[in-house]
Amino acid sequence: MDRIATLRQIEDALSAFEAGETDLTSCERRVRAAVRTFATEFDGELSAYRSGSGVIVLATSEREARKRIRELTDEDAPTVQPIE
Image 1 (tube, helix red, strand yellow):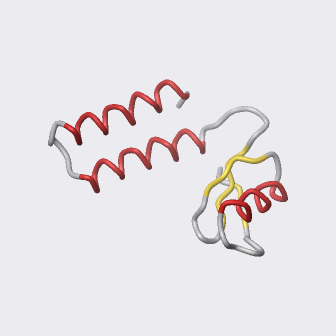
Image 2: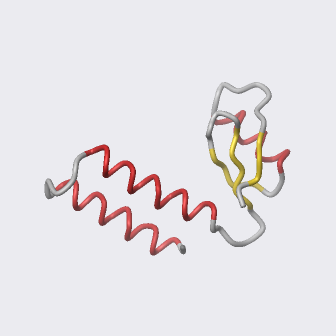
């Protein structure tokens, strides 16, 4: 999914929430699904990596992914796995 399609899905989820057609939990689930789909289908030099705590980042290597996760969380030595 490209960036524009992802943003449209997020906009649709927010519009449904604002119109009272969905609850907050469902809206969050739709937004999270759109962002995760974008991240895991991302093309280019970056790949998606998930830490043991569930944090997902885009990075060029596992080493860079661990560094980015440390910067974003309190994890001192995060484990990471590539997302296929």
